[in-house]
Image 1 (cartoon, rainbow, N blue to C red):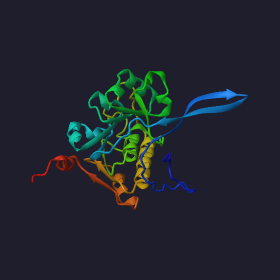
Image 2: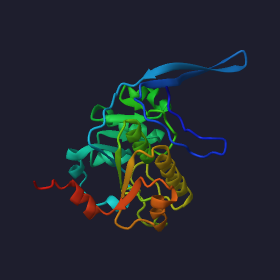
Image 3: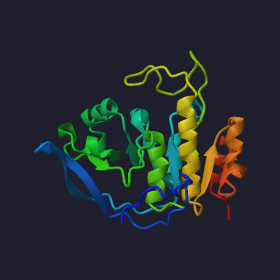
Image 4: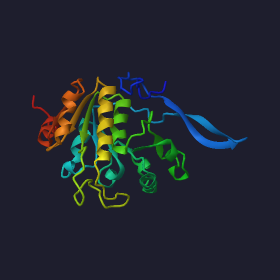
Length: 252
């Protein structure tokens, strides 16, 4: 069964039950026959068959994580990253939705070094050459949010968000660790952040049995409302010092 957004007539997001992901039907070709558009579909079997191990550490590319050593996370669970993070750190799973970024990642053979997820349109491109896996039950979110979405699909019950700032810092200021590098332009609008925050709120509501931890030394005020505004109590905010303490093995 394919998991989709469980939304009622008033567009209210409802909880969804977890079940193992086996694959889904995707469009592989579109043809016009007798003036009608016909979509050719195939069942895309899941080749990853991911099994959750430890916590899920989802890595965004916001400047709040600058200076944090991502290798500290490896012994405590699985890492989920997006886009250019592979230039500095190779997560267990990586996500891209932008066509140019995905093409560059294919040229760099990222999919030979880790599990690379992308939308069905990118999976079917020639340069993919079997290096890309289909984002499971794709909610059509931005790449960073696809990371914590898929961590939920994989069955993780503890999901950490690192480098998810949910804010724009303003024109001329650093909004992304990889800003002004290849395939990253300058951004200076709040609308995209509103979308990111809504997607996170939706995820919290869809998976009330998952504990979400946002790591940030100076979170925006509205992020605190996630702990009370959803009436679910499955989110918390900690700083990087607290994260490091959680990653430090306790003495017997």
